[in-house]
Length: 154
Image 1 (cartoon, rainbow, N blue to C red):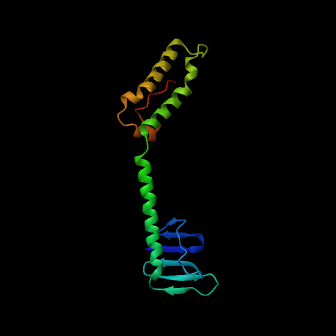
Image 2 (image 1 turned 90 degrees about the vertical axis):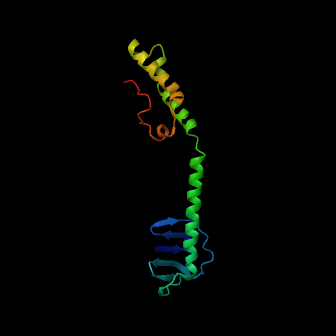
Image 3 (image 1 turned 180 degrees about the vertical axis):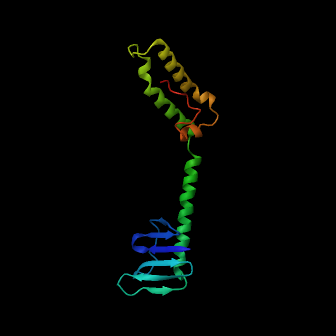
């Protein structure tokens, strides 16, 4: 494991990933940073004293535990946010935006031929019907080019 602890910045980095706003107030005030890799490391001091080699994390193992707890809390929050996401509502928002983009095609002076106007009317109806024919809105919400989206006329 590689661990870096920087109390003044409230940062803990573990195996290349850094998390901020970790309470490191328990670290002695004279410590600038703790550096650890695999089974050895060193303490860096604020007062320019030479680094102190360490062969055990000792009390600084707590920084690793706090990192793990914060990372898990972030993951739990992301999972909760995903679980509460309303993909049907998001699909309607995307669909309504596509409808709004082509409102001009239904104006009488739009310059389209009758055939083109019918193509646009068909496209717009397919957009309106989308929520009735799609069984899972998530792929369409996540991919604006998903093949289940109606194809806009040229």
